[in-house]
Structures are given as C-alpha cells and as structure tokens.
Image (cartoon, rainbow, N blue to C red; front, side, top):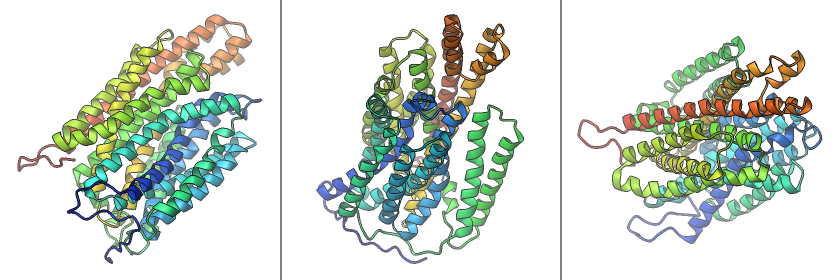
Length: 523
C-alpha cells in the first residue's frame, strides 16, 4: 500500500501552535455542516408531509404502504450505498465525491418535487439516497482532514450537534412550506442549499485530499452492497407487511446476512480490502458503532410515532407539529458540545453510558402521555431525550474516527453513518410494526359492529379508522382510535427505551478497564 498523499488548502496548524482553528477552517466546517443538514433535513422533513401526501387532491393519494416506502426508499438506498460511497471517497478524493453527491441529490430533489404519482416519488427519493450516500462519508472524512487532533473532537461535536437542527428544522420547515406552498416545495427547497454547498466546497474545502492509492476491491463492494440491501430491505418489508414470519422477509434477511458473512471472509483474505474488518476486533470501535446505531433506532422510531400522535390524536397542523418537536433539537445541540468537555475530564465510558440512560428515560417517558396530555410535559420529555442523544453521538463518533487508520477515513466514516441509517431503518420498521400490531389488537373489538368493508379499512391504521368514523358519523369510534393509538405508542416507546438501555450496557462493557487498570479509552 502506498503512503498517504497529503496536500490541503486548509492545513491544520503545527503541533506547537496553541491558537484555535483559522477562519478558513471554520468556514470549511460550515460548508460540511450545511451539506449534512441537507441530508438530515430530507430524513425529517417528510414526517409532517405524510398526511398531505395521502390526500388525493392536495397530494398524490399515497396509501399507507406507499407512505412508508416514500420514507424507506431514501433510507434503504442511503444505508446500503454509504459504504460504497466511503470507499469511492478514499480512492477518488473526498471533495470530488461530495460535489458529485450534491449534484445527484439536487437533481433528484427537483425530480421528487414534481413527481406525478406515489411510485414516481418513491423512485426519486431512492435517487436522492444515492446522492446522500456520496455526501455523508465525505463530510466526516473532510473534518478529520481539515482539523488536527487538538480541535477535531470539538469540530465533530459541533458537526454532530448540527444534526439536532435538522431534527427540529425539518418538521418546522416542512410545516411552513406546506402552509404556503404545494407538497413538492419540501423537496425543492434542497436545490438552493445544494448550490450554496457546491460554491462553498469549491472555495473553502481542500482540493487535493489525503487518500491512499490502493486497488479497487469490486468483489468487496458488490458483496457489501448486496448483503446490506437484502438485510435492510427485509427489515423494512417486515415492518410494512407486519409479518416477520413471511418467507420473503426472513429469507431476504437471512440471505443478506450470509452475503455479509462472505464479505467479511473475503475482506480478511485480500491484500487491499475495501474496509479492514479487523477494526471490529477492537471492542471500542465495535461498541461505539453499535451505540450509535441504537441511538438512532430510538430517534427515528420516536419521530415516526410522535408525528402521528401530534397530528392524529391532537389534530395539529404540520407546522404546529414541527414546532412541537423542536425541543428535542435543543437538547441535541446542547448535549453534543457539553459531552466533548465532559469526556476530556471523566472519560467516554461514564459520560456516554449516562447519556444513553438519559435517552432511554426520555423514550420511556412517553408512557405518561395520553390523548389529553399538555405540551409542556411533552417538551420536557423531548429535551431529556435530546440531551441524551447529543451527549452520546458526538463522543462515540469522535472515538470511531480516532481509531481509523490514515487513508481509510471515508470507509470508516461510512461505517459510522451506515450504523446511523441502519439503526433508523430498524427503528421505523420494528417500532412501526409493534405500533401497528398493538393498535390492531386494540381497535379490532370496536369494529365488530361495522360492515366487513369499512371494518377492514378501519383496521389498517388510526388514520384509516378516523376516516371511516367520519364517513359513518361515528364520533365514538374516532375516540377509540385515539385511545388505541396511544396504547400502541406506549408499547413502542418501551421498546425504544429498552434498545437505548442495551446501548448503555454495550458502551459500559466496550470501554471497561483493561488489565493494566486504565480505561480502554478516554474518548
């Protein structure tokens, strides 16, 4: 393997220089944060548009399955191709891949905005996922390149905290746009963001990135892509069908896991692997990666069911729903930078473990909400949840990047981002499946007196039940839909909390003391 080639227009200061980052470094970080915001906004902005998209007049008349796939097609492609994007970035240059990803993302956003059907929207969203998979590994890699080890943790903490802006900004921005424009505006807004990022990248980001000249590993890329696709598709489809025993579902997941196992075996034997899977022998790398995945499991799952809780049970508009969810972002923005300082003083293990437990408490607290709960109580729960998530994600991300060898930051950061996306997919699919199963069991007894056709329709979801109740003038059935949904949300919330608790246990084990009596990492 050839030695890394380094030539950057945004060089870190020398080791003896104790001054802070330069203005150019801060501007470079701003560009990378804006690029990340575009990707994460698209993950969250659609949550408040689901009701509109289901409307045959104001939207595209999407049915519940099409609504789920309008979210999942983006996430599926994004998660599956992230690893490939990281490998390509390491080989061809991080800024080059960032610019290419921005081009694909912007063009696909315009396509999605003017989609004429739910199917076309699903396909356009998938292409947007291709662009995002090229963008995200490059952003984290460029941070590692622009900032030296003295300022890298702070830069990554700020980068991680910015995801909180998207968590809140997506629903709020979507609500504002839907109040004033047609549904396509939630995608068209990406275009000016892309143009700003491209201009900033050309001016402030390093043009000659540090990367390692190594042979391309097509077999490794093919196996990882096919394996991840099969696993993630199976998980999403299992949630959509609400039938994990379906042979198509478990067969896809099992087949994907076999391909991933073959990928690992191949990568252990080739001289220049796409990704050095031996890194997973380091329990710190594995523990931090798993913890990130479990945090986003809870986040995406909770964003999914709370959006329907606020708009369905409480009848909020998309804009009001977005504003109601804003406090979780405040928690993330506050938690990330504070955790960076705490880790320096106390070490990663106690800080991230406590953060994961706080996130678990935030998820579990939803069991205290009902159809009549006031917003102040809900906001308190959101802030606690956000603080825990922000304080957990920033240190674990920095720990992952610190372990990576030179020239593999693209593939390594892709692992970090893949774990986020896979966690998000699992959160929506698994908790969404739990939500649907429990809701149907709650509402089924109330549908016995209805004709067979309306009863079958009403059983699909709380939204469908309310629609049937409105058509048949049955206000009591609408009230039962609300109470049934709340009961289902309580079960899903406990599931999300349990997963975050497992994440805390993983971090506590992975960063336990070594035989020498020292912590395995201080963060």
